Length: 439
Length: 104
Image (cartoon, rainbow over all chains, first blue to last red; front, side, top):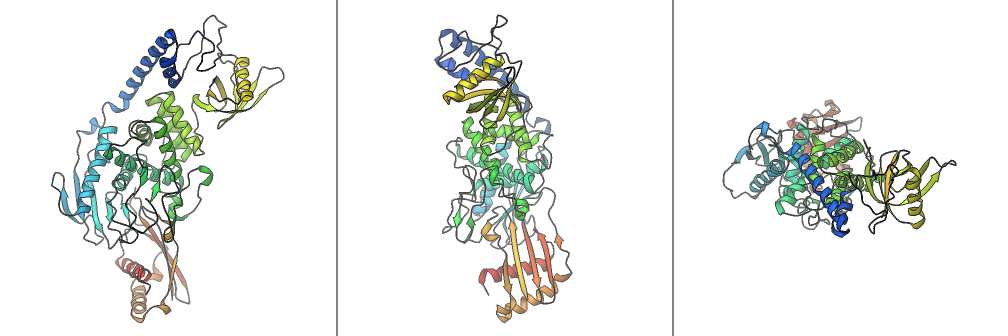
């Protein structure tokens, strides 16, 4: 823990409590430290750099815990793909047409399925240390040419199945690599959280498949979060259909708008949650809400989406506290916790904000940093011992009586922020605000 | 006889394709109408349970069909998932889908 001698730097205003001769404030958000490390005076820069180095050391240690021995207990990587053809029938798995290590043949669907299975296995193994669907090297099975002009791809509980599409609405379902990642991820979800396939847990199940399906695509193309198109099933809609894909994680509800297909029904915010009973309670519709939360978190965190946001989502999927009937907010709350456990408070704040933006407020097990919030109202009790502020996205928060900065100092800062219409960073939980900085 | 099919779900789950579609056998050509009537009889449709769930644990993105047939004296509705294990039901569905696609 550290603090700086100046009460008011050019970067922020932070009232310190020197009541016991030492400043006892702490928990400086890393992004502020980084700003100081670059822009502060000499002493500030040295201190900030020390703290950042220490923080990064802790971060590295934490990262080793879940990822150091990925799947090693389950044995070495066992990537064993088997692609079958149903020859336009419906018997599964059908006839084996390409096994692991065999060269490509003349059937484009077979080769796309083979390559997509490989890219999906590699994402899970290389990044998350997962050795196939069951983390024990399970063979990866896919059947192509299922049915006659079959307009679907599905996971039957033990293998992937792909139709050829009718050529009028859909092209072949292997055409988009994220579809393959999507179907295989249903296997991973089934082997881990087992999210039930209806309503909110079902929409989370679908969202997991879209998230990791999109990450398979992004990684195979070497795209950062900012470069990715965040579309699910790009290229799958036949020419003449008015649409770019089946879903957009970036802008749910905008993937297509066609006279035959209708308009993309995905909501992008909890206020537009669709309570339909169709589609197992709208599992492919309401998945737009958690999809967008992932997109927002990945964009805020920068770099490759599979590295930080992907690890947080994967850790949440494996968390034994995530029940089969989890709701969006249950899932969101665990991501916020894992963001801090695996990374740091800045990552945690970004994940919290992502959920906030789609209308979901994660439950907090302790205080976290929330950045750039507007103070909308302030209130103090007549004897001035208790104070409250109404803060954007958070709502009413009481100033913690034992705050190191003292009730008056924090409250004064919040009042000034409100009066000057200046945003604040707050360190708060579901009830109390412990610290604040004016931006 | 009126046959109504509603198919929902699937990986794509497109709303425009999930609308119920009704076929009136009186408006079909004679061959299709005969074939449809005989398949409905062969599949013992009116004795099938209202729900036939064939999904394995963990399955996802499968289609769910809801088929309603009104023979003038009674209406029976069966909701069933894919894969369809009953070959008569599969043939019935395939025929209905073909009629919807071709419009005859």
